Image (cartoon, rainbow, N blue to C red; front, side, top):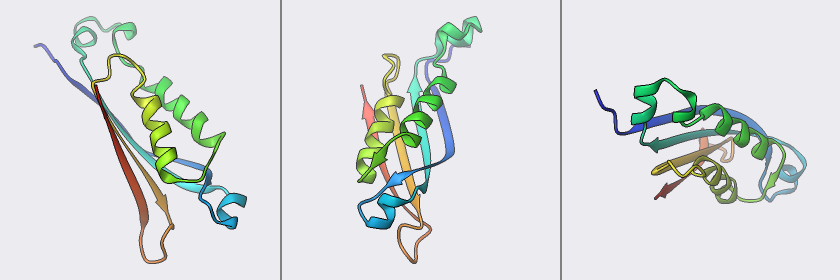
Length: 120
């Protein structure tokens, strides 16, 4: 069986960062929830069982964690774009989607989220 497309999903990565423009947002870390979907051709990986033939989601996740935890963001758009840049960085990636939720951003809502997409 030949698999031409793999879809990696990193679901509900819960991190804390400085996000926002209000004084309390600048002074205090807030929770964010990150979901990433990465599409890439994985035929070599499905045939070889060799890590060099697969996209390493652990490495991608570690880069996202470092970015989010070690930086400040004024806008959800900037944070989401920076995560998308990491997730789509490998030349094998054909499509990528990143959605970042900011829980408690609005009084009567579970969260506010922003989703960005990349396509090669």
